[in-house]
Image 1 (spheres, rainbow, N blue to C red):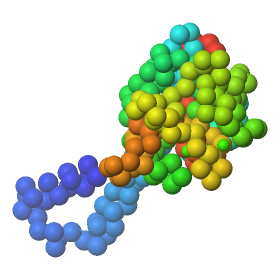
Image 2: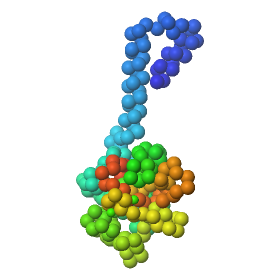
Image 3: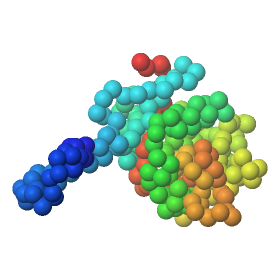
Image 4: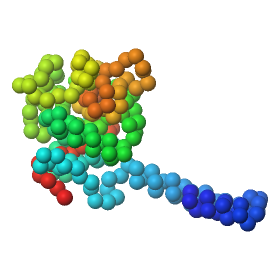
Length: 220
Ligand SMILES: [Ca+2]
Ligand SMILES: [Ca+2]
């Protein structure tokens, strides 16, 4: 794009009329623009282009991975990397994770999850696939939510918590995987609010989303 603007600027300064551009020059310019556009798009969705960017909290490290995966694929990938899908066990950890998401620059509309009210989400490590209604952090196999209530006072941040009325997990159409919302849901509906940005929702595990890996040690 820059090249194109420079050339048009040059043409303007030197009174070159567009008609004097040959067809060949236009093809070349188009190809240049396409190259720039596609390389920018790649930067936006790829964490593999450079060193991973970790964030840290309480002796653990975390990685926001910008690859679109189903919950199961993301969970497997987290294990391959030597960690697990993020397990959020306290308000402090929730605050750290959500702050890192905001700082990452990921668009709050990067993906529209149809069964999540059209909002965008990032996968976290909780599932009730093994036993409906029993939510487990799969990394440590810790049950934290059962039949609508916290297990042994364990932390949760399900949609509606801030408003004082828990709306999730609702198992709508058989939802078994947890994700953190990047915006309120449902999106674009002013009078209805099932959850706000940072709260969690159960959604279908086949959605393809970015995910967060947690490591039990501090990585540099
Ligand atoms: Ca479920
Ligand atoms: Ca739900």
